[in-house]
Image (tube, rainbow, N blue to C red; front, side):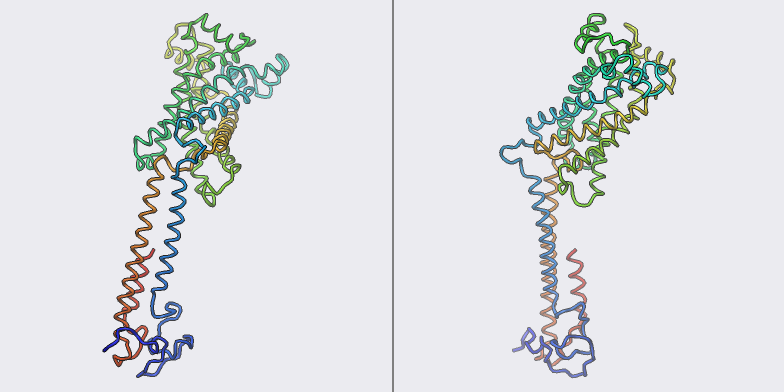
Length: 449
């Protein structure tokens, strides 16, 4: 009976040869080489099955590693921790926004004071340093911090609304769009969510902004405090007096916030894409450092985009007559100051907004880390975890399919090669005589990525 497998003598190179061997560098353990000796750097033995198995194991291990990472990301919050996108999560983000915006805006009140007064009257001061010196001599340290109270209260309310609603709208719009569309058009999603959040946040900010601008733009300050200012405005102009700057405020803040959130998220993603390793590999301090850097860059863009509207808000709050329409007031003010006047105070506002935005994102993301949440930006949008798991499972299936196909090809090759080269057939044992070996190896290489 003819054997379909090579004998041990054939495998170890002790078969009968009918032609003289050629001298090669093959190791002695394989016996004397044949005239068509296989290249030893490619074929350590006659079969590529071991190589296929090793490659398949390596790919399977890599796929398993990625799968484990995705499972960890997709797991719900551990017991005792708040779940992402729950009511508690949005409440925590709201409080984080309150801290981030209220404290930072109050801290830069001296910059805001000079900026506002120079917008109201460009001839009042020649420089920022001269302005602070003049204010300090006339009003003392307290004068430099004029308007800190309405600033703290107003921007605390605005920050709470802005960050809390932004997280809510971002998740809601992502769910409406679906995972694929949310990932593809994520910048548009950021813009829509931030615009919606700022629209609501400015309603909370506007009364305090009216008091702040009048307190800072009038010398001396006519109000004893924030609520005294609110009561005086309501007594003279009614409740509408607190909101007569709402349209210019929306015109300033909505583009500002759209730029702030969309550019921040994009810059963070770009920074992590260029840093070695993934976002999760970095410490909390490093992640908040990235948040501050990205926030500062985003703040510069915000200041440039929103500055003309900021000038107009200051002018309207201090120079709009009772009952005067917004459109006619804007036209009159623009006629007085011209296009160049819309950019009064821009350098100081760039410094102020850049620092402010960087600190806001740093405080907000540090608070999120403290609460056990991931930092903003650089993460997959809601629903991406499911898509990621599906992709990894598909990759695992393809790897297994490629391994099976390759092993089957090798097995068919071995059967044919063994039958052809068996010593009982009377032919030489020739490791590369048949082109099947090269064909099988090429197919094996194509199957496994």
